[in-house]
Amino acid sequence: MKQLLATLGWTAPAHFAPSSARAADAQVEAIRQAMLDVLGWPVPRGCEGLLLRIQHALDAERLWYLRGDLMQALAYKHGEQPAAEQLARISAMFQGVLPPSLASSQLRY
Image (cartoon, rainbow, N blue to C red):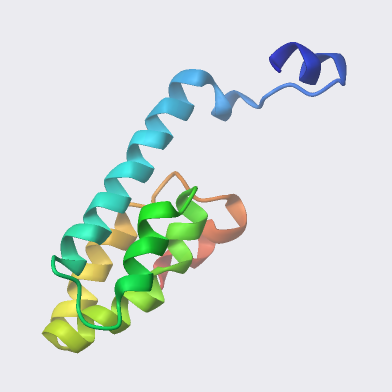
């Protein structure tokens, strides 16, 4: 695959080097686990779909967009202030793994 992409003239940017890709994958998995941990088990009634979306999100961007649904579930379960505090800790974990177009929106939540 790498050879095919090189043949087409595409080279991976330096920030997508294999070691940094593994580090990013590990960070995405840490974010996923943190989201699952705060959601808890058993999941609140009606949040089964959210659980599945978190478990099957392919990248940090998809997990980023699930924060609103997670906030709603946590607010229902714990109240708005504790939910916002938990979500702020998770949002901070996205540092360095989001595409540049989302990096500026990291300040929300």
